[in-house]
Image (cartoon, rainbow, N blue to C red; front, top):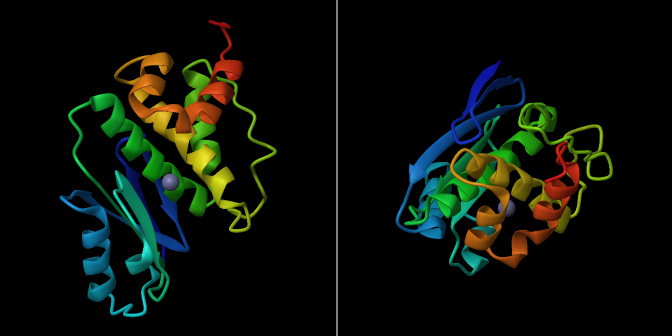
Length: 178
Ligand SMILES: [Zn+2]
């Protein structure tokens, strides 16, 4: 069965055979919401309880469903560069999980960024990539999501030094070299 997947912060519409996607939108408390989602799908033994927040957003796979369901939620932020970043970040986790990062790279090329992610990419939607590398990939999508609102430098300032690796990748990939 093919599912439509709409990633609104990235402006990407696509399809997947193996995954479905549900964007639960803005919530008060990310971890609390995901615990409810787990109950909804009766995934009682859920490791999410162990996590310490606060989280700006989260994407969680419900693997007992067919197709597997990816659920995203996020909190509202006063600073649009933070909010759009978080949403772009979470949606990029989805894109990565369904093995369609190329769609993001295509859009970045249109914005003047020739990003080479070959060292981050494995052929199969790569579940084996380490957690830190996954976050860098997601941060690249975070920057893309917020670029509609402001420039790279301001996005970096709004989101802090933890997003510096993605900032550096994008700065190097910029065709006009600014
Ligand atoms: Zn993440």
